[in-house]
Length: 252
Ligand SMILES: C[S@@+](CC[C@H](N)C(=O)[O-])C[C@H]1O[C@@H](n2cnc3c(N)ncnc32)[C@H](O)[C@@H]1O
Image (cartoon, rainbow, N blue to C red):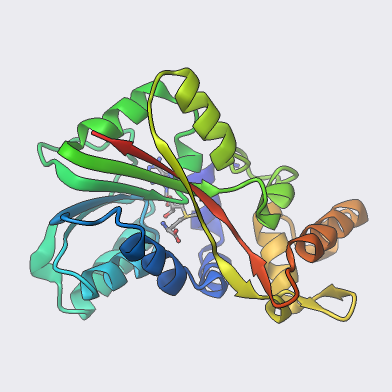
């Protein structure tokens, strides 16, 4: 199943599981506190999904935003969210297209790909294209699941193609290709009880595993259920599970 098709097919499941990640709070805090947006007046988001993080960033700053989102559903949600928050005048461009098909004469202080580089992978042309969208002195940040995230083990067994990319693998590849960058970890901390209860997975935990593996819970092989449970248990520090992301930061 193609990645975009996957999100089109399961939008409700996506909204449910991604809401549980609490990215709006944790990822926005990371982006604002890490300094990556310091001095930035404009941001391009590649694959904003429902745009929750982007709206929150706009709320907490004066940023102008452009976005490119291939899913019509997410494109509409993102646009509606920005309008509902009263930030419509700060939209520089809204493109209902894949990044591959995106064409623009705009450039941005910061380009963000938040958990969307799965769709672009080890593609030199796409990385160069993303860097061309950055103004001189600006930066590109690509954040994607880290090896330590329990979602990595589960997505390795997913029926959905192309979602097993990790930040470490992307960072190694980018270095080998000669793209200098910094690497930072974003901690997506979720309360452990959201996914784990006495010896098993909660309903939200099962939803997450089903979603990432693109398989109804009852159809998931028991070996994968065990792998998923162990991945969640191993990632539990006693209070939280860290759906960690690695962030590659390229200066333009
Ligand atoms: C895992 S979601 C992440 C959404 C949001 N950035 C977040 O962190 O919650 C991946 C997003 O990338 C989008 N996407 C998929 N293929 C894409 C492509 N070729 N170009 C740009 N975005 C893409 C999907 O439609 C989806 O909105």
